[in-house]
Length: 351
Ligand SMILES: Nc1ncnc2c1ncn2[C@@H]1O[C@H](COP(=O)(O)OP(=O)(O)OP(=O)(O)O)[C@@H](O)[C@H]1O
Ligand SMILES: [Mg+2]
Image 1 (cartoon, rainbow, N blue to C red):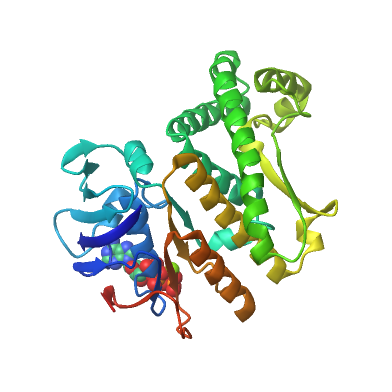
Image 2 (image 1 turned 90 degrees about the horizontal axis):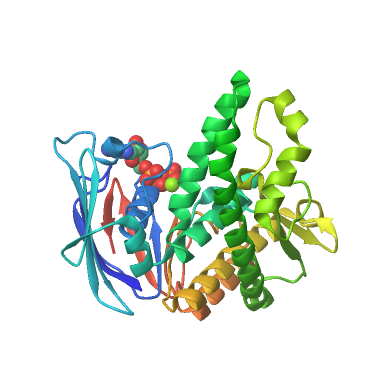
């Protein structure tokens, strides 16, 4: 799928404007605070994702106006649809004129967004890699986001009980099937990611590497439910001492190694950035293969730390993928860009 034309009104600092998008590569160039990230966030919401973390709904509406904000897009590609999102005290979604919801929209318009933190996918904290995996799972399995939300709610509850020394047996009973469900999907998706990586890494990387999921359990268990209960038993004392939950998908990590060594140690900074980009492209391959729809890829300042050669390799790989890509950067040294260049200044986009 792809954006063909978008329109927004009163969304953050963005000026009300119709923007036509190229079916292939698009790059938005503008100085700091011009609205690049805001634009990508608006596009990501139009594909069914929630508002950016730690942002309240009311802060999506331009601070200087009374009333709500609107986001609208026409999409084409595998099918033609329109999406209208209204943001007031709550968010409402219409898909081709009919009331819809975010998880249905994510199936219509699969998309993956990568933000500047994601360039540290390899050496960043485990949460960066978990978010990466969660995004991919949520695109592929519509129920995933809901189950993860329920799991996190129970986890907060359990941590509260552990801090206060209160019984948590009932919470564990409710958490266990959710933890097992999340683990089994993360296993499946990690296996698919490995296949995707084989396809993209030849074009981008000059070294071999391995990835694997390390679950937040004491060892690996074929049956994730059994793994959850056995790990709880094994770590019971430690959990009571530390007063925090140490077992479950919230402790998972994606382990990346090069010839048996951790990728953080074995690779240079530039190589780690390239590997992060390869992981993003592999995710796009997986989505395309499983959903039989081309995902839209949103990239915010992802290439800024790559050298010229790596940037060209990335552009080639994106072209080869055939996806619609909308990237944003503050770096205006773009020449011979094989797509559409859009300029943004004080929230206004021009081509
Ligand atoms: N609700 C809002 N109303 C008006 N302006 C807002 C609102 N929310 C955020 N902004 C402003 O939008 C501006 C642009 O933010 P954005 O993060 O999109 O910039 P950017 O172009 O990505 O900058 P950078 O290159 O530094 O990443 C910020 O200065 C912020 O104050
Ligand atoms: Mg930004």
